[in-house]
Amino acid sequence: MNDQLILKFPTHKAYKKEDFYVSPSNQEAYDFINSWPRWIKRIVNIFGPSGSGKSHLASILKNKTKCLQIDSKKLNEEIFIKFKTKEALIIEDLSENISEKLLFSVWNTALQDNKYVLITSKKSISSYNFKLKDLKSRVNSSLVIDIKLPSDDLISVILAKNFSDKQIKVEKKHIEYIIKRIDRSYEKISQFILTLDKYSLKKGRPFGLKMIKEVLKML
Image 1: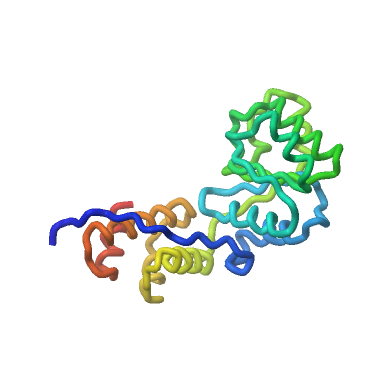
Image 2: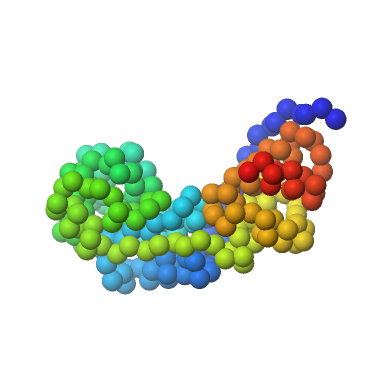
């Protein structure tokens, strides 16, 4: 059979608290988010690789209080006006290229007005090479939580969840086969699922072990 045209179908991305699978790799971050508003620090950085659940945790916080959520690339002066009516600010995927003066001002606003800030990033912001000494001091005094590499149980749930979101039926033995052969990283897991989904549509073949093997060889 010739390769078929790939059609993109909408997929459902669920970010409910009950859909978040807690494991030793993310327990600390999950417990902290759920302890709101009894946070030991008003500003926290949760970091980990792509697909590790940072956005899911941010969504859980949004359901607890009035939050303003923005991507770090969209951080600008207007943030201070919008932040006034909220209890918490979520800055997603903080870039090292961020305006240091602006970030420092956000930090001070949160502390002065007794607000909360959740910053997500791929690596700890304490490792960022900030030039502004006052900002460095603020960063060093904040709480930093690491989401570690996934366990087998967590990989299994991530795979099952993503297959379910894409309406792909998969047998338990297939998931076990994948776990034993895929790199233990959130990025590789996400890449595998995306590639398998596209490859299945392109080939127009039933989903099975043969296709899984072919996609694993591509990564």
